[in-house]
Amino acid sequence: MANDNNITTTEAELNQSGEPGTEYFMETLPGQDRYVAPIDETPLQDVDSVDESAPATSMWADAWRTLRRNPLFIISGLVILFIIIVAIAPGLFTKQDPNSCDLANSLSPSSSGHPFGFDLQGCDVYTRVVYGTRTSLSVGVLSTLLVVLLGTLIGAVAGFFGGWVDAVLSRITDIFFALPMLLGAIVVLQMFKTSKSIWKIVLVLALFGWVGVCRIARSAVLEAKNLEFNTASTALGSTPTRNLFRHILPNSLAPIIVIGTTSLASYIVAEATLSFLGVGLPTTTVSWGGDISSAQTNLQTDPLVLFYPSAALAITVLAFIMMGDAVKDALDPKSRTA
Image (cartoon, rainbow, N blue to C red; front, side, top):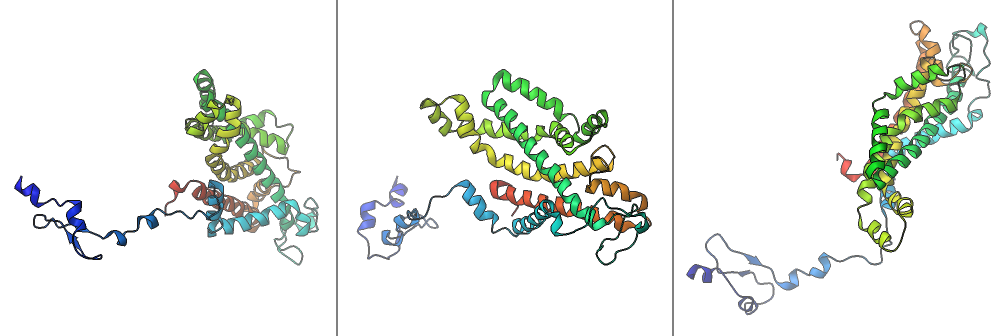
């Protein structure tokens, strides 16, 4: 008990010691000295102070603030903006018809007005690369929008209502998840190869590509529906459907946007692959995949005919992958590696 009295000091004893700024030490055993700073040296009001004049912010505002400072986002955004301009207005970059071919120019090298030369059929490679941007980008964007819409709807319904609804939709998702997207698309397109169009490619890619978004949406809704705002909304008399579309889905969009952005590049590659295999778009439609397929026969003698559409495809896919990584880091800070 004597030791306990030696190592304790009351608040009154501390208040009776020295001037402000003096170091105070308790009576302790050797090696157990404790420093107690004066009150005026630790202004607690400054530690937890909040700037009340600062404007209100949100997750989306914070994400945009992070994105605009990310060089990866700026570079990929500029490249994607240029690609979109080329797809919308190819006439600004070339005045020639991509389907205007002359066998007399077959495999001719680059010349004035034809910087990429000509392919085997005598078509201007530069013009076809420019006009192929619209086809590939259209398939990628439309497929992504349809996949995100379908996958989000199914996943949100399964995660919100649960029970037998979740069980049935989850089993359907598992069935489609077991089917490889590219293999399934080839089989379906072979069944309907008499009619080829962009919309058919989009629908087939969406048919086999929605399962990934569905799983992400289901997980996000399962997490959001147990938060306080949903309980409060229900207590105020809001219906389940209103809660789902008015409160829960808007708070579950971040991971869905991330996977949608990163998946867009894969659908551009899928379209090019299907066209390369001859089951995608018809030969009359200008696309990068079709031009790559046509140029493979002259790979050894004229590799540049294959290089230009392949380079355009690679740059576009790389830009969207970089954009997806930047958006992922902004909306999901836990995924950042540095």
